[in-house]
Length: 319
Length: 319
Image 1 (cartoon, rainbow over the protein chains, first blue to last red):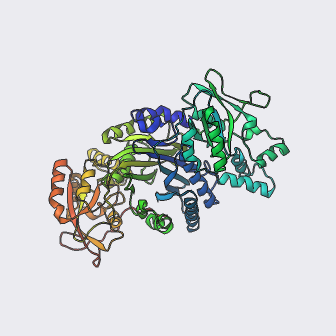
Image 2 (tube, each protein chain N blue to C red):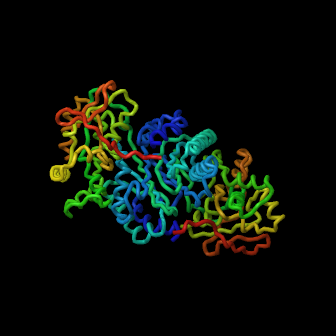
Image 3 (cartoon, each protein chain N blue to C red):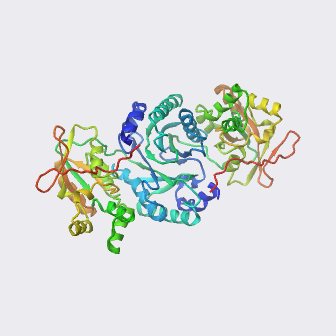
């Protein structure tokens, strides 16, 4: 059973009389009256991160993944909590020092504060991060409008290639390897964009499970679909070179998740303010497609307008 | 390394410029300006609960343990989040239905709302519960005053006997077994007491690790100690009978944790209002000792005024 079905089937009902939970159908909890926004995520070794050989890097990755949930909703994170479960080896003095130093760096970089948490003994290493922010409003899921443009920030696919390298499934020159591994461990989080999103985005999500999986999630209650143009999907120079050199298919590389870029839709009338915001904040924002009528099928089109079939629609938590 | 030392050593420093985190020295996060109170706890199978043979009971136990953290601080819980990590067996359809039904019952009983959470795959079963409440004030730790009376709600020790029975270490008649097992799985949470505590308690904690361990935690930064009278420590009729019949030592049964009763101190001048509150709310509240000068040693005294040595000071999370 997919995670989404599971939550829907067993838990949506018991929270149905609770307007704050957004029917468990969004990534965050929002109490509009109090202006409180909370996001909670669990990260398990071997599942959400490869291993704990570099505690410093893993901590950076999971902190950024967690605050990404708030930022993509238009909310600046303020506090966070971290709960770790692991054994003596995972929480050795050396590792604890690395974790603490890494948290310190992230706190400074993103202006967030550690507010609590706990540590428990377990053979399996996992972390649970709770991020908290205050905001009068958020960008909801499922609020895309017909004819909206679809945008994405930054580049997609780099993190997936980094993971493949870490898993020893592919290998390049050291400099290239390092570039992609760095992208895997350092999600490129865009705090300054958070508040701007509230001005132009109709709906939004951060890409954690993959472009297509998250597009589907973002639109899951709506009577509309999307048309994406493959050649518009932004990729880095490194990934572009790799595709050319090794004759890889772009479509296989851009929808595997862990990108932590922001995916959003906006009315065509917002096109200029989005371009201006992109320029002022120096944040790449690319128009990649359109929201179309629900009577048509969602599709990704190649340069010739031919539909591309994606085998891997992204990462879905299976039970 | 103890959990407390671990948090203190590696994480207190990086949150030291953050007044909200109470220097990671309390059970809850409190943003006084926003009136926001948050508590987060992780519960691991085999550690915080014995097994998952009765999902319904385990869920009740962990939900109550979690909201207990807010209640003992004088805060009524309003929302909660649950994150589960487990395998297919733990999250079978039958178990999910049991979890969902159990949550529904607890929501109704305590007027709390499920607001989110996630599910992830893991071989080791664990739950992380986040409880949220709104309050202008809380009862802090480490605020006991010299000559304060020490109080505890309800009875101690029943839950520990229940756990021993579940572990097949002791056995009684079925009715007696059931009584204690029921106490283990159903912490006796006292929502109506929450707001009253703000009126008379100087400092408070809920007893999760054991009377003595939690007394030590409640006073850990203060230049004072305590004197507890063993015969005043409240126990149930069942436990009292058990002690008489089997010639067990009371001191061995009352400080093993999992009681989820509220331990607090109050000025002697509050004695009457506490008695009145106890009567009106029909909640047992017992005076068990006094806060004394830090120059003396903390102690538990028997009926003859002789000091009792406790071998087991309670449950301390070891790394």
